[in-house]
Length: 245
Ligand SMILES: Nc1ncnc2c1ncn2[C@@H]1O[C@H](COP(=O)(O)OP(=O)(O)O)[C@@H](O)[C@H]1O
Ligand SMILES: [Mg+2]
Image (cartoon, rainbow, N blue to C red; front, side, top):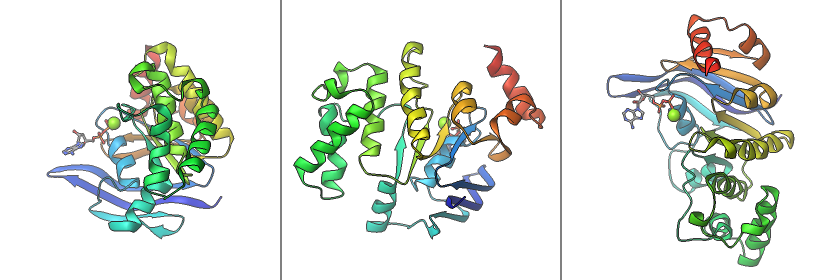
């Protein structure tokens, strides 16, 4: 499999806290990697370094063989090639769903308005929101807002998508509608790194599960193996806690 995202010997500190410890991770093109682990283990930081929202202390991160650019125009281009979906949706409140999805293609990519609108409507259709294009975020449920955020990320035609706990802020009945959209993206061959505690999604959509603890990758396994026979005490303990409730 062609590597798309590669981290080699990545370390990061926040002051005295060694938040990423010698991270080595390869995500192949078209692969879905689910990242799980206890709170504070460095999952969000890992996502943010891949998108270069955070710098690293040492090590290298490459996208399609190219090192991540440090700043400027090249960095903006990288950001558009690796989309990110956050727990908190982050939509512009004063813009409609359609305007949210159109914004970056017009502003960053310089697309024509009509072209960007047609594509935005198509993407809103793909996430099941064709009828809601003209609504504002406050008029949409959390699950609908998160699907708009996914459409917005897709509008930049990214090479990969990073999801940081995309369903954690949602009421239970809305989780599945978001996971279904993500399942479809996975089937369509999108490269995805997904931080989630949704084990059903991990089992059915992931090619690999990466388990993090204390800033380290402790296990990097095929889902079925990881869930049925975790090797480390940390993973066994973590799984017993989340599978219990
Ligand atoms: N901007 C920051 N400054 C200082 N410490 C941070 C910052 N962001 C995260 N941390 C710390 O780094 C550790 C890992 O955080 P994070 O990556 O958010 O973990 P996770 O997403 O697995 O819960 C935590 O101990 C957290 O408190
Ligand atoms: Mg986090």
